[in-house]
Image (cartoon, rainbow, N blue to C red):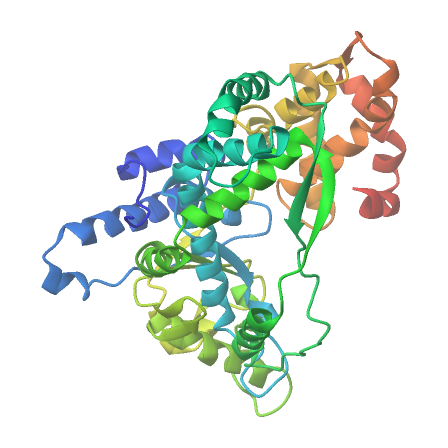
Length: 450
């Protein structure tokens, strides 16, 4: 089994084009991550003696909330099937304080890598697993009533089994129920192990060790044949997959292709002043530094080197500045890109252009009720103007404001939709003002509602 690889090798221009399908604007940030991804491929092409010396150029994205920082990182990871985790820097506290251990970032990333590789292996063996599960199900439906070792009875039953096999594949037996012995999922060991700061890995290791000693419990359940088939397919797939191999290759995949999105980095920016929370802020920076610089982290799948994991940090930096980070950490994020606040024109494009555009999402949702929803061009302009005005008068939350405004605009239609089957509803500026009028007029109320 080979390590997971990108489906295709994309050029920086192609990466930006793919990101453009989902994210409006922010060309500088898109170009920066496109080059970072392409450099990974370039690194694999250089001579091996130089390969380990080429380190990723980590990125800091600077910009207000809701402008696309997280979405750019998440989409780029999907493009290349890279293990990806998003963590908030403010959730961590320095060593010695009760809080999350920074090394848990890499353990979480490794879990993601294992899950990705396992899914790939399940897809690869699914056909074989389905054939094996089908045979097991036929043994339940057409049991062998002859003495063990009797070939005559098995041959006699073969035509019957094949008849049942055809019915099973055609879905003619979906209404029937069978009794299946299923393994109960452990809801816990009955022992509470409370992790302290820095002891999360020990906590997990202890749970794994205790689980190995606990007897597996199973019970018989009656269920429809499709449900039984899924359970049997999963059991057969588990038998066909070598989890030791998956874990080993997942570690390699994480080391070479992992991406960590470190959000709210500005919340831990600040120097020690001798007292107060600043000590903890700088302490968190110093704890994060080793994994960004390159260190070895122990996981339940083996040790993971972080030297070639790509770190993308992001923050609004309204109060702090990137220069407020400790110099050592600043040096590990050589690429800095500033994302722009969204304008009315951006909001219009966000509502209509991306493949996952909000207008398209809401129209598809209400179409499931038989309701045809149409937004006039003027209505889209009105929604964009409302979002711009509310963001300027209150907290600027970027494109997330559109979710709130659209939800409030369509609240009545969404509620009444089951009784409006077959109707066509046009969303116009007048309709929007009617739904939002009182909220928009009352500044205090709009701060709570929008």
